[in-house]
Length: 421
Image 1 (spheres, rainbow, N blue to C red):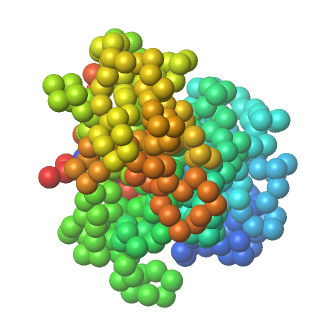
Image 2 (cartoon, rainbow, N blue to C red):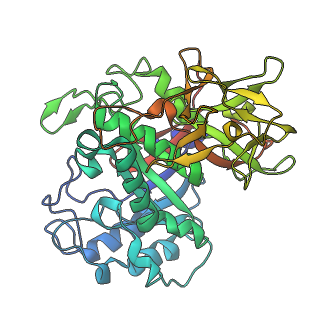
């Protein structure tokens, strides 16, 4: 393991050591004996000794930037009172004062809500980080069985109540696992990713994608099992889904920070289905999708208009159904006003002169058009993703936008720049 970390450091890869499981095996289950303190394979004293050993072993190894105290706490013994991993955190800090200390939540690392009532108290400051996980299967088959707008709204409300509130309190929150089936045939995962990528952009979360690997030497009794969540194909020689890799590249851009903001902050209009943002083609008076790093800035006014920041006389205007949206100077017209509607809060809807409502949409050429709003009812068969847009706080920053893949295995999380061709 030391040789692996050394090699990663020599290649400018940052490493987070993750105390994943005690009894080696595929993770995770409620009854696997690894879920919570005093489970069959989870002795608290042994756990502290292990954390101390790893923190000591990698002291002054600059590639190791953090230690996650325990992955996905779970099972019948989990409880809030015993969750506060103070002894483990203090042991890591005593052995290695340079690394970040990362705490995961209950219920497979989906719930940190209890910290609102009882904050974590430690002897050190400035290096405590919280982590959260989320997948499509976290909510069972809700994305297939329910209306995508309604499920998206419920999931976003749940995340904000159980973890992302920490951002408002000034704490770092790390989305250390999210992902989905990249074959494109899993409806549950497809809908979840369309919704969740919008939330990641809105909150400007740091994240690690599960997973890079295309296959395993040995998993759950199977030699060479393929990993369909993997960015790479089974033989690790190709990217499984170039389109998805391009989508998550957009999330590497720090929409709000760190970095130096050049000029005033503004809104980006993010399209999670593609990972692109709305860009104006002023010479053509039309709008299209393009890289968020090149995106126009928009101001969403109290009058519900979307003004172009570089030219506040121009706003987005709905012409007619099935026609391109345009840039217009008639910003007081009803069809230049855009309300965020539906439970997902991602439909931008405007009223035409004939009284009908339309929503922003995207055609096959990535041109922004207006169409009848999709899936606003309880229908679970339709897919509104082409009409989902998220207004994201942003600013032009002098930063690198090199594509980065987060790599994860059963013991650590790793990051490395990856060129996309």
